[in-house]
Amino acid sequence: MTDTTAAFERTTATTGEASFGDFIALLKPRVMSLVVFTALAGLAVAPGSVHPFVAFVSILCIAIGGGASGALNMWWDADIDRIMKRTQNRPIPAGKVSPQEALGFGLALSGFAVVMLGLAANWAAAGLLAFTIFFYVVIYSMWLKRSTPQNIVIGGAAGAFPPMIGWAVVTGDVASVESVLMFALIFMWTPPHFWSLALFMKEDYSNAGVPMLTVTHGRKSTRTHILVYTLLLAPMALAIAATSIGGPIYLIASGVLNAMFVRKAFALWRRPEEDAQADKYAAEKKFFKFSLIYLFLHFVALMAQAGLAPFGLGGW
Amino acid sequence: MAFKEDHELHKRRFGRNMGLLAVLLTFVGIVFGLTIVKVSNGESIEGFDHTVRYSLEPKEGSQ
Image 1 (cartoon, helix red, strand yellow):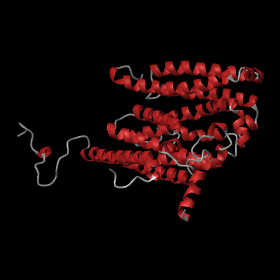
Image 2 (cartoon, chains in turn red, green):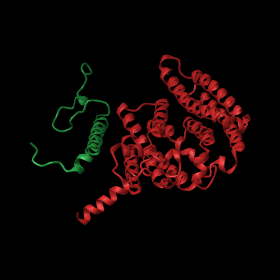
Image 3 (cartoon, helix red, strand yellow):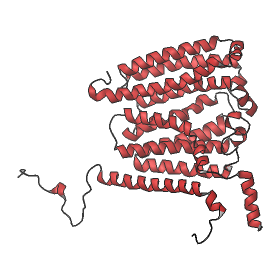
């Protein structure tokens, strides 16, 4: 055995052999699907039009940019991903992809996605995508996540940018009332969504030393925070109905969804910890699942509103 | 009969290489498609050298 082959075997023994699928897993496909969906919604409801192929490439670039930030997040968080049960099977802690590979992969894809979006659509959208990647990786992952229990409140902004980018692809505009309200909808939705997850994944975050609200302020306080943010979310969501992209369909859908969400948040707030432990956090898990449906249906309603406009069933 | 038996490494990395090939082909397709869309701006491509430019031809009955 030569020195080279011996060295090669040592390397593969420690890092394993990454398959194509492991690199796909680095892009966090589930998060990416939400990014694709909300960006598509932003693009679909924006005034004006783009060529369908440009729209397709733009959404692809936004998805790749979102995925690249996921890969960079996994590179930075590899140490805590090894500790948390939920993340132990990710490619880096599983030993399939080395941290350096993930870093190179994430950086290369970030650059690629931003430049391609600039060339395909416009540089306003590309700039917003670059800022989103920066925000998620540097502001959230590197800075806030491990230093403040408000980590997901501000970090949630990263997930809220995609509909704004979709909007910017069509209009070249990054700061209209409609796109800012779509941003606000996801931004205010993120805390109740993640804190309900933290309520039933409690050991994970405390073991990893991530200052989740449940760890630093206790579980009762987290339930109060969920209720407050849900109450603040409702007017943001309903305000969209009054803009150019809103209309009766959206207003009805949003009204019903917010009434249900607030009712569930109120029930969660009143729930004693003993009851939650007794039924293994059934209500918290239901609230988490409903939060996904809540956001999905809001954007479906917006797209339905835009799709029905040519038939005279659109906005006000 | 194969000239030379594939190295084990090549067999192991076959899936990964095929995946990369698919990604590269998709990239070529995207650049090609974007070029067509950007150049034609949604209309048929018209040569600008030594050819008849139909868009400059006077419309029938316009004179």
